[in-house]
Amino acid sequence: MSLRNYEEDSKQEKLYREMYKNQTLKYVIDQKKNYEQFGVIKMRMFKALSLLDTFVDSSDPDLYLPNSIHAFQTAERIRKKFPNNKEYQITGLIHDIGKVLYTFKYPEWSIVGDTFVLGCRLPKSMVYYNLTVDHPDRDNTELGIYEKGCGLENLNISFGHDEYLYMVLKQNKSKHKLSDKYLDIIRYHSLYPWHSKGEYRELMNNKDYETLKNVNEFNNFDLYSKEDDAIITDDIIDYYKNLLKEYFLEEILF
Ligand code: FE
Ligand code: FE
Image (tube, rainbow, N blue to C red):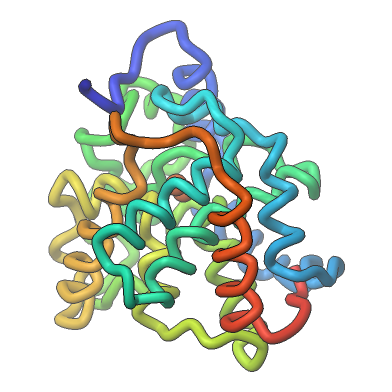
């Protein structure tokens, strides 16, 4: 089975057209500043997960299932390989919870899809690169506004479910037990030009190479596999409910 085939005239094409038009450096900076506007809804992680029951990600050509099923499947794939690494399993379970942005009326082009860096040249390996003609930012140098080796954490990456959940977890640090390694996996898991196409190497620092390894490993679990069970049993749900209770001590401010 081949994954991630992007066709013309599809809902993916429509989404990326909007994304490249609207995700600008200014937009991303504004979103990060706007973070204070979040933190309005307090809920347990499990509740946030259940909000994804009705959300189907239309950026993904391989996914027709509600995102909550994808969450359990990703976690289960990790559990099979790493039965003792609960932190990793939790990461699989929650990695897409940032998609709750859809309940705050965010447009899809600012929730899902591959992410990319603003403030420098758009790499040709991006999906639907031809649609970037509509992108308003015109910085065409490799480093753009950044310094060589400045590190991923200093980049302005298109704003979606990755960065949002990362900000939520950072903001609620005292309320969970996830370490930075896993927060970084969450933060960069959609940055396909970087983790799967070899882009942005000049912007990386030493630490980022470790993150790259972690994100690439995680990506194997995030993609689909033929052995996947679409049926999530009560036992599986109970297992993760308990894990969430262990790792998320109380309600989180979204
Ligand atoms: Fe995702
Ligand atoms: Fe995912």
